Image (cartoon, rainbow, N blue to C red):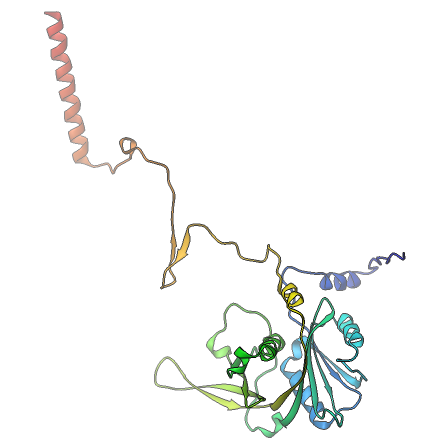
Amino acid sequence: MVLQRIVKPKTQQGKRFLEKREPKLVENDKQAMFIKGGNTSSVVSQALKELYVLKKQNSVTYKRKNILRPFEDETPLEFFAKKTDASLFMFGSHNKKRPNNLVLGRFFDFHILDMIELGIDKFVSQAEFPGGKCPEGTKPCLMFAGETFEQDVEYQRLKNLLIDFFRGPVVSQVRLAGLEHVIMVTATEGKILVRNYRVLLKKSGSRTPRIELEEIGPSLDLTLRRVKLASDDLYKRSLKQPKTVKPRKKKNVSHDAFGSKLGNIHMQKQSLDKLQTRKMKGLKAQKRKSQSEARQSSAKRSKGVDT
């Protein structure tokens, strides 16, 4: 049996590199790979280039051609994933049997989890849309329309994969002016329509602005081809979170319909005799009077005893 050697880093840069790749309770933003196949058309190349721009901050593109067949052999993709520390990939290829082909997938523990193959029926580049574009790194608003995304298992997994791919960094709040980019995905008549819009805030005569959508591209009409999904057990294992990350439920704390925080306080039984009341002059006078009466009564008792 051959034991694997543990190589310690010799430089600070190497140490930081290994620490960055160590498992964390809260993982980093997911990295994506954009890979060209051995044979690609101009449509596939342009689609990969423009989709890469949408996820430019957390992505790596391979400009050289790579002769890969993801559904036949997953080993090269897993090697690239380990090399670049990537969790997602998009592979583009073109051949007579499957023209203008895109394969979207994700990894779990550097092994393929899901893969979905899509065919590009129609592609419109960003250059063909007039007007301004959204700045790079803008967090998009993802919208899905169509009953198929709720009824079909394959479409449900595709929806989940697209959210994973384009959601960007996780944030707790988004200001209204920062909502600039909308990605709309519609499933209708066996096709998947992907549209990109820029949000325009217009004057409305009130505090709430009037919102208009301007299409900026890229625009894709896709059809679902081959699908390779993870088993239910493996999928559940990939979603498992450590107990320390899950928020603990606070006892005796609740919220009402307006968001106000309500709490129950448990106290020991109080003695009302020892309760400190507010000091008032009237109460002080009564106290002095009762004390003088008590003295007089005690004096009378002492006289009666002497006689």
